[in-house]
Length: 290
Image 1 (cartoon, rainbow, N blue to C red):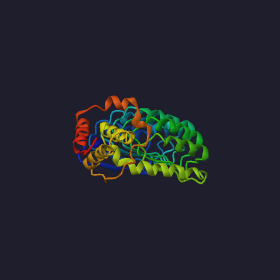
Image 2 (cartoon, helix red, strand yellow):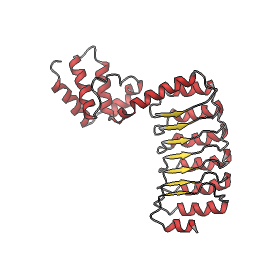
Image 3 (spheres, one colour):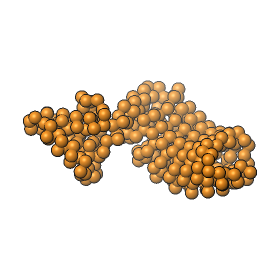
Image 4 (cartoon, rainbow, N blue to C red):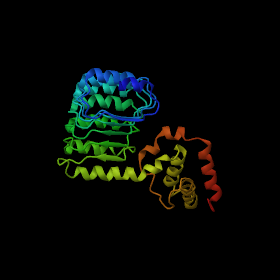
């Protein structure tokens, strides 16, 4: 009855079916509804013990659904067999932004399937993996995804049995990943490594608003900083003021351009646009001396 209603309903945006003992047939019908429904944005199926069979039906729907942005799958006994079809769907889906997989018995094999999806997925911004025994091996797989994924902002790894090995891998990855602004890693096995992780995440969070700058604006800032010793200091500071003022950022913050990413040749090639030229021109015109 509910599934049939969802096929024609155009008003319900969020649906909570937590702990409803949905069987495979029920999930199959729900999946059919999701292939045609165009209004539902949030769905909570936590605590339904969907397993591999149930999630396979849902995965088929996710391959074509273009409106669901939040999906709760906590406590569904997915394991590796269940996460595999979900990962295939996430490789194709371009709508889902928030996914909770809390307590699904995911270990190294299971997380490897999810990582394959994260490498190509460009819409997920938040994933909850807490209370899954990933261990350092599972984290090593996640690190592969974090090295290339540029959309994930929040990752919850609390109580995932991280040790210093996995913690160090995460910390090293955060030296080059500037997208992740929240990483939850409360785990008694981390020790001092946890402090390193949080310090780098905090830096990412502080700089997150500045990442809205265009490529050329970032390059302009970098060049101003890099050539501070050879160009007029007045000109360099003018470039900073031009960009900072345009984005409502406080003046005097000259420590943005510190990572190697802005020195990539690709950035130099892509940076030539009219807006950037305007910024440089404005900097020259406002500089008292060169």
